[in-house]
Structures are given as structure tokens and as C-alpha cells.
Length: 139
Image 1 (tube, rainbow, N blue to C red):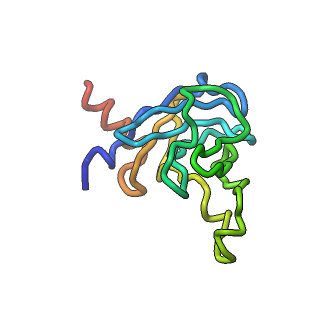
Image 2 (image 1 turned 30 degrees about the horizontal axis):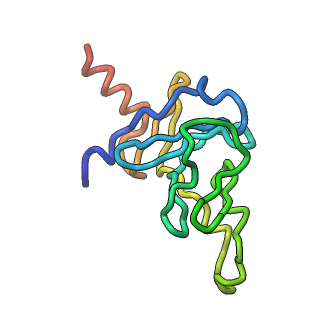
């Protein structure tokens, strides 16, 4: 596995997302992501890709919103990444499940001293371990 995928990546600082619905978008290690403070005040790092057609759901660099909408078919996601609106949902059949078709979160996200980090793998050292290793290497 690519060592970059196991690394922790700096995403943003909590002060950049002071209010519910505040977000930033960018490309992190070749992956488009949204960092957002959801409707409950929790920080989330979501892949900025519609689950239906792999189109960006948010094209703005930063802002405040209650919803992200895919420009291709109009699927609507809330700030938690849940799929909350589907145009013409009946054409997807009875097996279609909105509950499993939300935006994908990065496998791991952590906050240290207000700094938000993301990792693209579920395995590997914790954020604290990673930062402790970085701190010991700098001495």
C-alpha cells in the first residue's frame, strides 16, 4: 500500500469553521474533499464526490450551507453527508437505499489542538502516535 495513504494529512483548523454549515473544499493527496461543520456542530471530512456519478457535489472553495447538491442529477446531501434528496428516485427501483448512498467520509479524522487531520486508511497509527513520532524526529 502507498505510504501516503497511511499518513495523516493536515486538513484545516477548527477556527476556519466556526459556525454550523461552514465548509472548505480542496484536493488532498489527489482526492477532492469537503471539511464541514455539520448541523450538530461536529467537524466532518467527506469525499467531495457524488455517489451516483462521481461528480463534485460542491464547487465553491468555501462558504456556509445546509446542503450540497450534485450538478449532474441533482442529488442533495446534508452537512453530515446523508443523501436527503433524489430527483426521480422512483427510477432507481425498490432496492435503492438513500441511507447507504450518502457521501463517503474519510476513513479516519482527528483533531489535535484545533488542527484537523485526515487519513485515507482505517489502519495505521493513531493521530496521537503519528504526531508523537513527528515530534520525536524533530528533536
